[in-house]
Image (cartoon, rainbow, N blue to C red; front, side, top):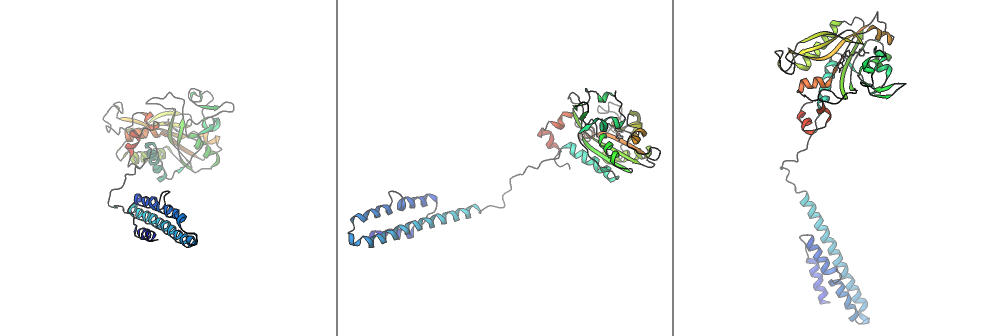
Length: 339
Ligand code: 2U9
């Protein structure tokens, strides 16, 4: 009995500084060869008439050891929590890498926002197109080379479904369901059956525009595109229009800007001409208006189309088209900070 009293005092005063000391307590008192088991074994030597009384004492001793063990465990976990929240808030944080927008998205967003300021709405359409919206409605004749398997990815023939070769098909879809005035820009991905190289790819991106209303003139076309160039490349950049041909516009033109690298004096980018081509444009062919039941005597319109990769090349001096789709982080992270 006096031995048990001694153990009880020891239990009461036991404190543990860490998990090892808690475990040492468990082994000492509650383990298979521990003190509790040991004193329980003493029951054999107790005379029968005292067994009941001694049993109660032993049971109380066992409970005291178990309860102390629970308390020690509890004290340990709360002290560990305290240690875990004991953080030095003045330490510098772990760097969180922030992603960057793709350069083509940066440039496309800039292009679209300039036209939005001129009242153009944004229109989108499917990348899988039918022959009518991609070719026939746009005055591309049956034997036009663009329709060739060599130039176009066909998904199905007869009826013809294909990957759109330009976003002009979006303008076609809008003309189909909307009456003038129509003033839209159509950004999107287009596909052409080209061998991939630094200068050509099987897909690229366009921003095309269309403005149809009464009294829309070539002067409106020139002023709109001139404003675009000033905003995109800076004041002082010059423009020039050269006559050209597109099936969907008449008259048609290609527009050059004064070289953004040499300012017009001549360098390798502008092939020593002082000018770089950036887009095609023209007055919407009256036949197209009629294709969409728009009275060509009452309404006129202008349209333009440009490649986002081309504008991006001029803005950021990217000289290989493949870089845009290789997903090389060393290329992409150079556009950090650009919005
Ligand atoms: C409709 C009416 C007219 C869209 C136009 C161009 C001129 C043009 C090219 C420039 C470089 C495409 O990315 S590129 O290869 N585009 O030159 N696109 S006018 O004219 C339209 C379109 C739709 C209903």
